[in-house]
Image 1 (spheres, rainbow, N blue to C red):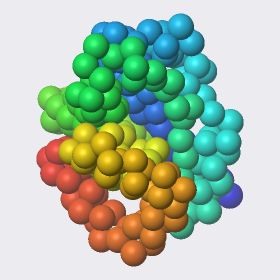
Image 2 (cartoon, helix red, strand yellow):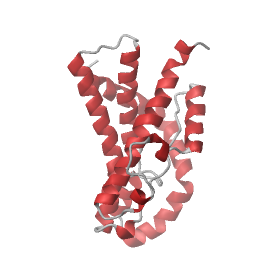
Image 3 (cartoon, helix red, strand yellow):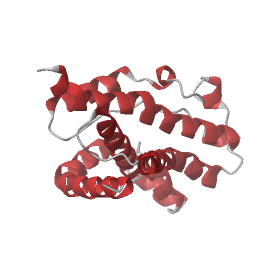
Length: 208
């Protein structure tokens, strides 16, 4: 396979590993620190350096899933350590820390789209247009996907916030144990439909 044919896959991997994943995790770490928990800061995670957020297994899964070209992309960065007991407002603070990640992805998507519109870039298959498209698309994807209310995704913190302590005690172990199967089920059953919707959202943001 030529480098030209590999270019889209390489761009996806580079954008996720070097930009989207690190900023997502750094947003968690910075928000936790601002709300009273310095755990992530002590581990050097309040940083945009991709190396400190790099997870070898997550990167390997990303490379494999992108290389297969099935459209189902699986990968992750090193989870940001947060001790919720240190947060000044434990219940609300945990939600804010969790939402900081998806929010950072959506802000990146919006910023990328604004730059594209400002310079008048159009999609023509060029390297610049491919970078812009994948940058916006995968930041929108990460923001939405991470809001699914299943551990260890960020949306689970939002779910648990609105449940009673007893309900959390009953439901959390089940979701934690079977979360991966739930996520795979969602991706298999709703993946194509969700993918089209997210693609349309990215195109709309870019004005293409």
